[in-house]
Image (tube, rainbow over all chains, first blue to last red; front, side, top):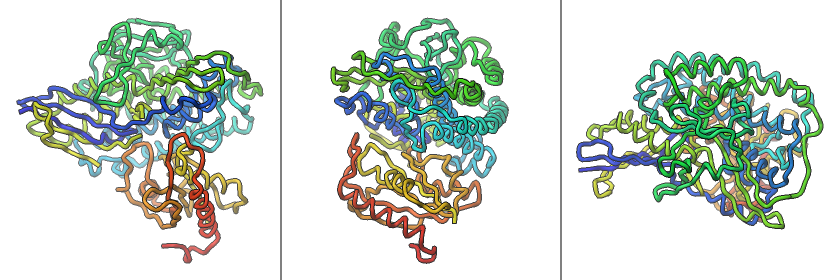
Length: 475
Length: 154
């Protein structure tokens, strides 16, 4: 008899989700689905609001990556104003974006994924958590907190003490950087870089222990989408789209973000509140691609900073050739990007022009449609607005980083379930691996939902008719 | 006694903003030098580093499990099982447990909360009953800061 297994809520991710595994008569996995079960509706309730409210409104989409929404939204508003923001304003925005990248990646690695990596997939779930990590590797846990604190401190120095800063505004930023703050930020970075380097060195020693997971955690072929600089290097704030296929061939390059609708279609399914973006020329669902740190490093020619470029070269050695396929290596890519973020912030802050007082272009709305794209920690983030003659929002489309990965996450849990789940002998470690592959993507479901939610893990067993036979819950 | 006040909640969901609004009011008030104020949307991991340096912490939050406008003040103890299902934000008791586990330190901790009447999205206004509760929350903070600890709620 076929059964359905449900994992709900999926733990150690942001938001609320459920995984269902449909098992066949022999206990083999016949189907696997990742369900986003929370609904929020930002795209609808923003309609009718003044466009200048959009950065503050959409930043509340998420408590963990508000800066990403703040930047993408302000970039869409820059587009509405038809202004080019002053170079120093752009550099300051870049620093804030990188500070958030560092703190977000630190949370993902040190606090959400380290219990699996350090304590083992099959460890007792009662101790396979952050407290277990604190007991076994207290220095690493403290490093994670310190790295987050450094990122957060820089964000606060730039944007004020609130987690949803209003310092970034349409046209630039609303206050230049003082020398005192610049010096204070520069003082923090060497410590952060030391933490990042030693964590990276430590993680490299762990990677060989996870060859089996690396071979089964979402390594099926997909394309990779990200922004790159005009030279094809690593980019997080601006730039142009690059899309590579699984063999490393560039399918799309130097595509302006305003042309995203030519590249990206969005499908919906009745089992999830998350959209399913796909590469339009290949159709749905064949147009599967991944975004985020793995895609960015696969697409970039170089990082452009010294230590990160060494790490990038080592990253490419994880596989004989071609783009790194395994989603397990999102963890590796995050650590490389933390190093890059810290190095690049130092470079930007040491630029004498960073203290320039011209940081904002002022204008009224000069077009009716605006598109803003940046790279959030989890991948490409796109805000698209239409406004009326009074500057009120008439239509919103948000394409969220986690959403881009939706098809790939569904594919990945199927692969992991095929490899590890035996419906006749169900064990917790199997289910944890199914969850863990989702954590590789570090999904932010609060952002990706088109609506309000909560995220525990449940695995449900369904019979061939789709009737619920058994459920495993984890609160 | 080094005191840290942390107000948290969403500023765009009506009365959920009670915590950060109370923190903002306190930050603009004349507080003793030993009192610091943080305003946050949610509680996140790096706050453990701030807790580590504090002798006393006062959390300010909105509550949905009491009647609108009802203000309460209670002691908090570390609780490693008070784990939020949303991985990116933390329960204050879990934060305290992190602090105890990593730094062998637990600041004397209180939660001052007030019942909410509305949590509507895209609402920047407190309801009148929450406005009134905000004043009571500030008064409760004042009592905690100014009174000897043995007179405080246990």
